[in-house]
Amino acid sequence: MALASEKRPTQAYIDLDALAFNFHSSKKFIGEGIKIMAVVKADAYGHGAARCAKRLEDEGVDWFGVALPEEGVELRNAGIETPILCLGSFWHGQEDALISHDLMPVIFQLDKAASLNRSAEKRKLELSIHVKIDTGMGRIGVRLEEVEKFADDLKKFDHLKLEGVMTHFASADDLSENDFTKLQIERFQTAVKIFEDKGFQPIYKDLANSPGAIGHPDARGNMVRLGGVLYGLGGDVLPKEIAKPKLKPVLSLHTKIMQLKKISKGETLGYGRAFTAERESLIATIPIGYQDGYSRLLSNNANVIVNGFLAPVVGRISMDWTIVDVTDVENANVDDEVILIGESGGQQITTEELAMRTGTISYEITCGINLRVPRHYLGDRPT
Ligand SMILES: *Cc1c(COP(=O)(O)O)cnc(C)c1O
Image (cartoon, rainbow, N blue to C red; front, side, top):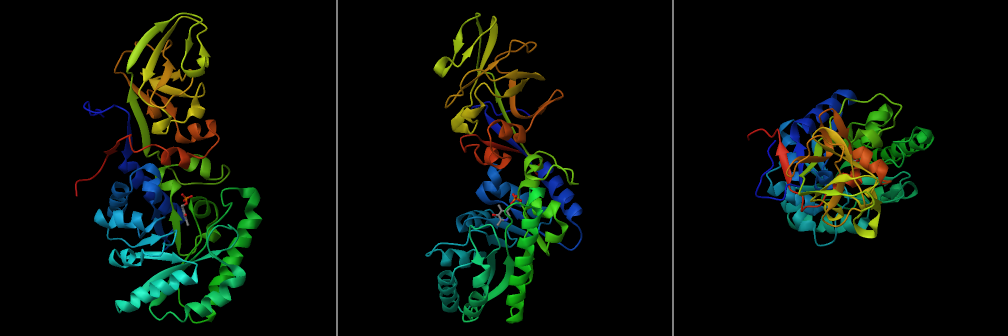
């Protein structure tokens, strides 16, 4: 795995074989006959949407989910042909982009349905939509008490076809909230029945994100929407106590030592002099900082791997630089590889560990790795 030397060596490796492994492993665990939507919003949680989608399409995924129509357009421009659902609906003015790129929106507002219907009518098309029900997440969706009226109003739009009904769980990752998850499932079933009683025939009935799909077999419907598990981020978003598919981390984060220096006992390092050496120390400076997504909350609060040894981050992380204590690393040299997320020589640092140290979830860590950090793809098949 040679880093390209003409670039700053701070790079993320994206292991597409691990992505494919996680897809098949999760699909097998979830079971026959349930379609898989791969959620690749937010640039595939920072992993690179176009490349990840291409590989998942080759592996036979059924759908892609994006947040914004813009993200769907990016996938179409990259040659993706699999159906794409825009989970976050759309904004007025984006109707033509949706239609011309064959993107399906989630709908939960009548004004959006009306404007999409007008655009479809102009083109003499029938467009498929998925309707989102708010069963307890409280974010976006038609509220249960409004479903009846919404369904009646939807009937008036001759150029729209209800292809899917969906909802989203608030706490599927927390077993102590199982009663609430159950309530959400019941509310969803009520909503689906209202649509069906009024003559709609939705093909897709989907509720589950990763924790829902893995931890709640009764929530799988006929499609599940998987994000986190595909990227191997099961360690903090799946309940600890449950059976789960084997998953492999997809992203690793690497750099190289830029500068090495010996400092004396009592010297301080970095902004705010937040670290004082308690012994004569060998200190390495690495070219990564909070701008790259290596959180300032990791100041004096993380390890990196150098030559198979864990080395602690010392002092404050700054915008472009981080300082590590390599006194106990055997034979540390300038240009040695440094692993911030990943494994080497029997040592491992997971995204979940960095999330725990910074009080967040793994998704925010991978999403936060800035575009200034090039993604370097491994295991891609020639197409
Ligand atoms: C992001 C998202 C998902 C995927 O959630 P994961 O926990 O990453 O599996 C599923 N459905 C909707 C509506 C989403 O916004």
